[in-house]
Image (cartoon, rainbow, N blue to C red; front, top):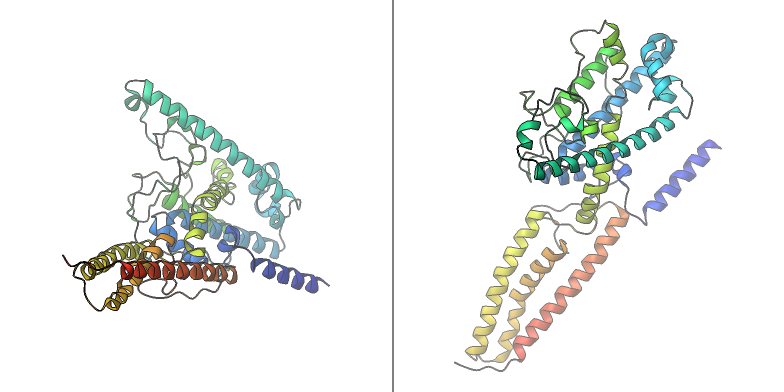
Length: 403
């Protein structure tokens, strides 16, 4: 019975996908196909110089998978989480955890934790925006504000008023030049974590430490090419990482801090998810589900289209003012006009009904996207044909007059 229900649910899900665009969750879970799959979304962010946000989300997802694997190993060994890790058990019992089901808490503990995290993010964003507005007002009305309020980023933790002014969106912080073809850093979070030995707590610390120093450590505090600080609201920033992957925590304070490691980046991960879902993902769908041109190829088509249109108009006016006979020779103007109008309209709609890029074609495997692009391609072809015919007959109909 369960297999039949699962099969029916799978069929219903596949049928629903035939009449809608994929959701952001489906893209991140790798359940979509080109051109709206995770790899294409990564390339889209990379062209904007904002792929670090997706890298951070994927690395935190891998960190959480590692923590889940640790908890499952403990339970398989016959011990409970309460016996193996009492500090984390007490932390999860008091504050909730996304691993509530895995560690043996109440079944709805994870749900309560997710809800409380979402509410906390909303409150933190409101507080961050209010603090940013206060700082902006102070900068504009108080002489010498910048000099008095610049302080070290390590002096406080999660204190909005102590931070220097920064960007208000994660997609405008990038300090690196966007690139079109550099695909070297396409990291991925595997669904199954390869390992040759049982996971221990030091592995969890090492995973969290790598994420902190790669994405959250304030710029300038770590001299490493792998340091790519992402934007976070002041209330979500983590200024220090007190543990070390080379030294096992022994003091009570370190053990209490260790209990935070599994859930340490979940609020930041949720913020990045919402930022990508609300900002970058709609633009990604417009780019890939309604068009098939890259920004560079669209720009090339604009330039080539204007040049060819100038050539066609020059030839057309030459035939008119030289009164070249027979008049039917003017019909050959459809050749430059066809290329020019095709390139210009392709640039306008970011869709070429013939090619996807000037270098290679991409097979479209998402059914609904294929139908969308086919319909738009038919409309672009009709529009191009109409403009070319109208322009050609216009130049044919004009009486010749030799100057």
